[in-house]
Amino acid sequence: MNCPPRAVHHAAALTLMTVLLASCNAGPRNAGDGDIHGVAAAGSVGAHAHDNPIDAKPAPTGATAFSVYDLEARWHDQGGHPLILRDLAGRPRVIAMVYTSCAYACPRILKDMKRIEGELRTAGIDAGYVMVSIDPERDTPARLSEYARSVMLDPADWTLLAGTDDSVLELAALLGVRYRRVGEADFEHSNIITLLDGSGRIVHRQIGLNAEPDALVRAAAVL
Image (cartoon, rainbow, N blue to C red; front, side):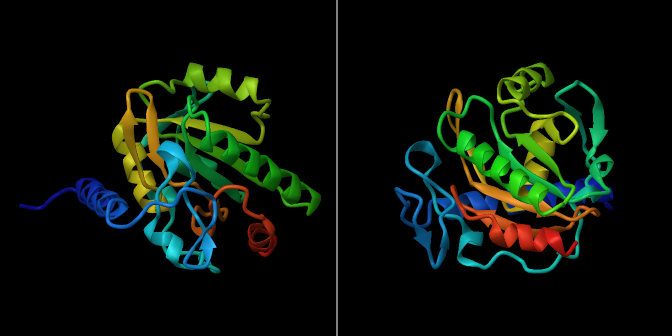
């Protein structure tokens, strides 16, 4: 029996996420923001502390062959407007997966993204910024709108996305982000900021918290 391409793609994403989560338990956890195998750690203390398989590899220096914009799932932004990821095409995008009730790692990811925003603006690079919630149950468009206002994100440049569990899982698998619920309102997740080119291909990953954005800015400058 032939499976529809969408079903095959989703099954592949589920398989990849299962492998990533399984490997989360395979090694020791890191209790700080130090280095793992020579690159910045993807975890910190508390529920966000964990190693990451991709942390042992350098961030890609060239665009990957696939585009995250090939995903067909529908999302809603903080204004409640429906969109697909392809609607974000046209300029570089800096993307991270977070959740708004996160009290430790996600505010630091946001701080890192704002620093990147400042550096790219100084370099004259017009980029957009995307935060995708891994907690679709609580992070409704209304909640994302409230959050965006509270942290002063300009909707002209910042897009916050709410999706279904399946769409979040599928995107996380392609971005190499691991996450899982570890409490009623808490998640364990990778701390990764990804640079996409205008076609949605992964150009660079910044791994860990408080990382210097120089390499990401250099990668964006040649797009």
